[in-house]
Length: 313
Figure: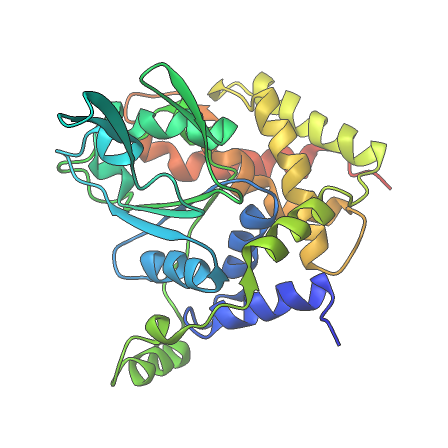
């Protein structure tokens, strides 16, 4: 008997949970971005499982997967590809770069320069790239997982606002509890658990589920609730930049996916509350010179806005 889409996603979440122990809600947020056809930025301290989470998602899907270790000397052509002249034919032959994949892991994305970071903009927004005057479609599904360390600034290039806006969710992992951390140590004694992961969904199944997600009902009251939060961010005295219209649209798609993961075909206000910080906090700009020092303040302001916004009944 074939599994339902809900059962398939629950199996996917449980599968990833064997690698990232004790972080069920973090995994659900990551899968939310995948199902909503968005992209995911995982931001946290070194060694808490950012790359393991990204790799576990990729290996749980029977899709093409490419990992990029971003470095300061990486060029846009290292991501997009380049044309090579063939002397025998007298013609140029385009050699596809690693971006022509289904799952792209950009590890330590803030280690590469803004010029190279920008190579991902068109791909993340439109699932296509323009090279040598020609537009090339990317395979579907197309999902970018990027990781970065927010606490180490030597040799890093902070992502600009327009790049951050392309990520549907920015999530953190955090340190595990003592009991869970002991389990992690035991599970890593012999080998890396992530290397033994088997795929539980294939490309066609994932695309079908992504289409099902877009059918989740969003009541008009939910639309108004989201817009109230968005407009409050634009009027907040501490914010130089509020949530964009793209941010509001992104929230709609994100809450549809999150409701689907919970086994519902409709969105409730609690879905918006759960996703408000992961979806909105990286889209606002707190006033001040050093942007990194205001990361937590942005989350606090979103919390304040949620607390003062009327929840639809």
